[in-house]
Image (cartoon, rainbow, N blue to C red):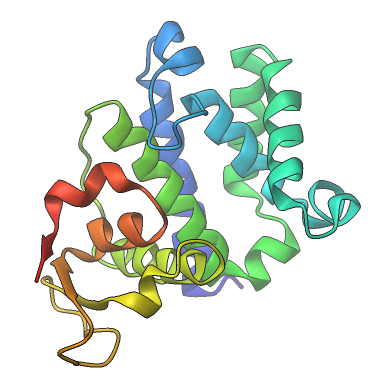
Length: 197
């Protein structure tokens, strides 16, 4: 029996596919996303490959950026129809590693879904639980990249507890869980949605 988190992972994958299905070919192939070097198809190729941690990442050791580039290069060789067919299987049958690490994989998925939606100037209804996973994923990414989570007190404006100590030496950033998570993950394009004090 699937756990609720696994069901949410599958549901968010299906929501991503619904977003991608509505894109014209030119936008799917080369549209802008908040992952500035990746198109929507590149984001999808990366997400599908993440399902196979052993094959996608272990050969590259700590050089996960190299692994990500290879994932995208492989996906670029596939026609859209074949990539989307793989995506439909991926959506309904998450790997064991993705199910075990569903908190992380769901956050990564939701961040990348928003990369596409926001990058293309679209909007979508986000189920209430999903922004929390975006926030958590952004906080984790921040620890390994920009350290914003250690340099700012993060105060969500949509009913989630603040992260970080209250201190006159530490600036505070306010915003929705979704915008804060994206900003923590390094998506500077969302900074206009935040309030810095």
